[in-house]
Image (cartoon, rainbow, N blue to C red; front, side, top):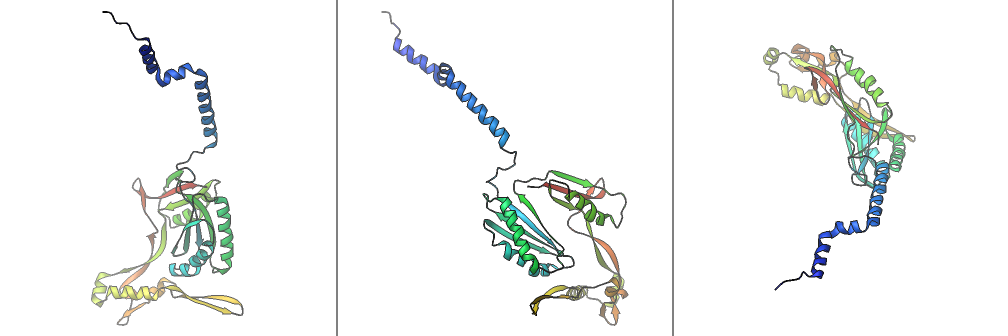
Length: 301
C-alpha cells in the first residue's frame, strides 16, 4: 500500500521554515521603510545627542561658591561668611542639598540642584543672592567666585610640573602666576593644584635643654594654642552702622614667639629656636625622585 504526501501539511511546513525572515523577504517594501527609518533616526541622534559620560536628567548638577577671606580663622569664616551665604542661597528654588565648608582664609559652599533644573537660570539666581549677601560680609573678603559642576564631569587633563632647584618663590609663583593664567584660558571651569607648600613658623626645641628645665611640652603646646587665636566677638550697631568685632591675638613675629615665657624666668629662646619653614597644604607629589606639583583641569559646564 503506497502513501501519498499531504499537500496541506507540506504547505504548513514551508510556512514554518520561512518564519519571520521569510516574511520580510516576501515584503521588501516594508523592510526598506524600516531600514530607512532606522538610518534617519541614527543620523539625527549622531548630530543632536552630545557625548556625555552620564546623560542629562540622571545626575544632579550643582554650583560651587568660594569666598577668599585672607587672615581669617575657620571660626570667623563660619560665623561671618558661611552662614550669611547659606541664608541667601537657601531661598533659591530647586535646591536639593546645601553644604558649606569653612577653613582658614577660605569658605566654600556647595549647592546641589534637582536633575531637571535649568542651570543657566540657577547660576543667575546664585549670582543675585551673592550680591545681596555682599554688603553684609566683612570688607576683608577679597573675592567671591562661582563655578559649575556635575557628577558627569571628568577632568579633561592631568598634569605635573617640576621646578629645577628649590626656590622660596616657587610656591608663590605657582599660586599667583601659573594657576591664575591657566584659569583664565577659555573653557576651563576649574583648576586644582596640589603639592604647594605654605609658609609657616616652626619651634625647634633642644631635647637636653627641655629635660634640664623640666618643661611639660603638653602644657606648653596648650598654652601656645590658647594664646594664639583669632575669633569673632559679635557686632555692634552704632548710628545705623554695623561694626563687626574681632579679637586677633595671633603672634605677629618670630621674636614675639621667642620671648614667650615658659616659667622659671625662661623663654622659648632659652630652650630652642623659632625658624621659618614650609608646611604641607594638602598633599605631596614626587616625580623622578623630586617633589613636583600636580594639577587637574575640569572643563566649564
